[in-house]
Length: 449
Image (cartoon, rainbow, N blue to C red; front, side, top):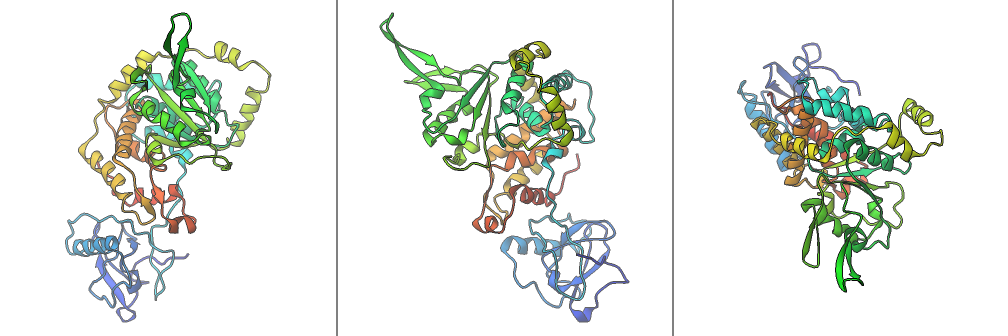
């Protein structure tokens, strides 16, 4: 769509039905067609995106239809147009692609986010806020360099898993088969000095197959507890959506409380404990959707996509020599840290400072998901906790003892994409969760810290 910027050479006349109002940022007088009332317009001088007020100096008509949320925003913006010091009002109103009338006006067009770029290990991690060369930053650099010796690419998966691990969270991975998820978890366990376990979920898998169960000891003539495969530190729950709900429920207590209760006796799991659950987005036959209660237990939902051309060529060169992978993991990788040091750094990350303005920013993002028109259900307070903890960990990885808005923006989509549910209308119209979340993030003013 070709747009005509505001200016003396292209201003619509009052006779055609226009609204004249002042930009809340720079004070410039702007004119738009009356059909633009309640929608977003961008000032050509300062690029401020704001809501066109319903009334103005030459208001001909009011907007034909607005919901309560958009009406409140338009009313607040109309008040701010008379006060140069009033802050701009943000809204979740998505402007249409075209407005009929005598003149067009620029709008904030939705942009699909590049989640892989947002989770880049090097470029986006700093976010323009370089920190000191702290022990945590040195450890992060060593771990990622060591992982790269065996595991190629998938920056979102690598960084997301490390952030979740050092934030006491868990990760849900959605990807097609053959992208090396098992290899990644084994590599991570070797580099970090932690035990690795894997469970292949199937339709006939029982809860006791995961947690373990009491068995009768013929020698002692008594029952003793036999631990299941969940008693490890890095657990790969492969194709978790292929098991029924009662098997899913067995993981709820484990992921939240780090213990297994059998016959009234609690068995604690060794820390750190990280669950990396996978599900296949292609094959839906014979699968069970994860309940919202369990989805909310995952700190991030990460999307592992096919590698780039050069990365796939590197994979072919690196893993096509028929060398036993166990031998390669043993010979080519060195252990960088230990479980005790991981727990110590995790506790230290909790001391990273988060400014009150950043807390309010996170709170606005989470609460806005519950009002967004295309979301039937928004995020819970646990989503805000995940953003707080993840921002602290990212700041520590970057050598800072304080979090910045870039830390939040970098993880907001992986932290929220599995916690919101689209309305039936949004699904029919083909909306994508990531794109809607990107629009939501852009509608909230970023605080200056």
